[in-house]
Length: 178
Image (cartoon, rainbow, N blue to C red; front, side):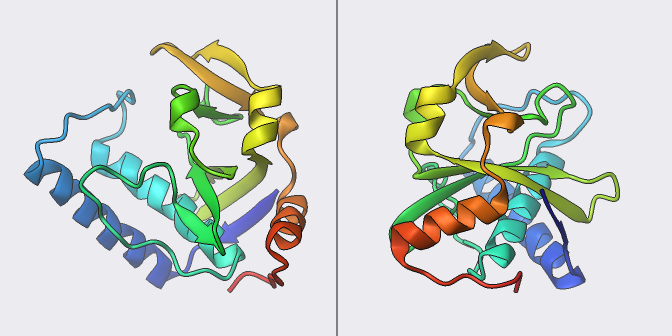
């Protein structure tokens, strides 16, 4: 597991991106899919942005700052055509699972599981899994709001292994967190 403490500018970026995304949702009258009784939509989206920014830093990529009408289509980051989706579940019951609502929502080459540490400025990058391996290892679990296709954190490749997989896939050299 990698611990990425976000800098003030990263947190400000997450805040600005969250505000833009929330404004876009309001303007388009997007119905919330929130299932967290304790957090607002803004807070949930903010923590998701934190996860995306942390992974971008580790991979020395610029974070995706686009705000699209229909969402990101399941792609949070891209490296030479290899697509990544970062999931940052907040509920205690889901924090050890990388999950998708169904197979059609799994549209990336790699899924990455992150959690927010108790200080709410540090992102824990728990691991990653390829699309193919996710489909081989996944099972169905109901976290209280419908069945989800998921894998447990023990089925994920640690971050070093994921970087090696992407390097092999793209022949890239990725260094220390930027």
